[in-house]
Length: 234
Length: 234
Image 1 (cartoon, each protein chain N blue to C red):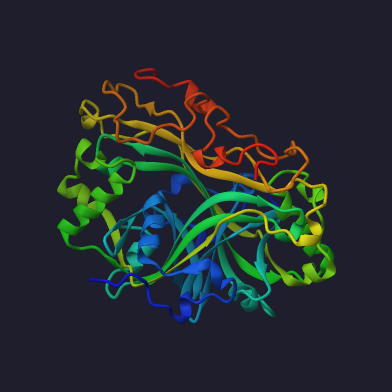
Image 2 (cartoon, rainbow over the protein chains, first blue to last red; image 1 turned 45 degrees about the vertical axis):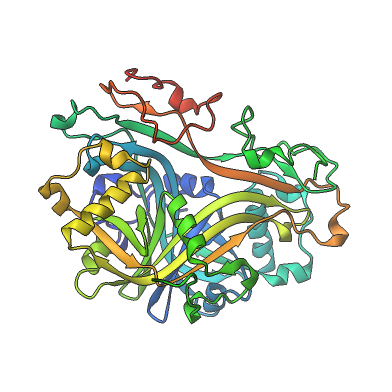
């Protein structure tokens, strides 16, 4: 059984703004699970690389999706690849009366660890199911699972969640007292990654599954969704 | 005058899916400019670090916001810090009839370079103005500029855009022919980072500036925005 917090290490101790940092496993898990993608960092010949990729968490393991031929997947063979995986939600723009106090509200998790290629077929299957279920809980049971050949062609990296930190900013503008009377608008503009109206593929005869995210903007779907919205319009 | 494309280098040549990669400067600039934040990768004692941060582009220079005391800013003193900066937009979930062809539509730019601390005060001022103007064009003229002390307390990194690649996926599900008759929903769910209704700070008497992003969901503002929406409600 794991403890409720990650241990603090030199890598996860910030140089500044320590009040924004925490080490709660449950908080980190919630941020990771809500995110649809992450940024994978690794080192090649002493140089940094950062690539966006898809992830899913099962208990204390973070799985990353890849191809058997991609750089980090090849590098992770054998002893594994040292990685830093970062997940970020941008929650709001924060406008202050002064330039200096302009900011953003966000939640991020930085994970440090060693990524290993998943070689066990059962584990790989479970990781892929979790990746597919990120789009909606139940999707993996409502689509065709991989053939043995397809399973062999995909690569999955596993990172045990042992060392991580959460950083977040919440709240409004933090202007200096003497700036409060300045005639500038200040406040918060919330931001959300919003699903638009589902656009069915040509020939799809079944309704939009209930497990998919509901559009937040039903009254005003994105312009690019209007043309093809509705079953069989493609 | 710069050329229209970035040169291809070993670092920017992908191992796979080369048809998704391009090197157009204008495309990279548009993706960078649309993004409100980026992920900064660098190496510390041979280990990768990836941190979210704010950026702004002016011509062929990418500026990153930081504090004078933060790790990468300290490391960038002197000869500079080798970095990889990645910007990603997640544009859609792509659901296929098979697990294997589930995907996402996205646009990303990966920049390789050496980051230097901006020491010239005029350049630092222009970079900060560009960072403030990311929230809305004109914001820097409609808020209080930094005092000399404030200017000294913020750090800005500059990276010349010399080596970068663009990667993108567009389009719908790419199911195998023999899967098209399977009874599963397939298609695209568009995603957008959507601004909610502006929440004014306590005491703000001026209207919401026209340069701020208009809410895409006026009919249904986010639940957390309803309480404080409207001037002076805080």
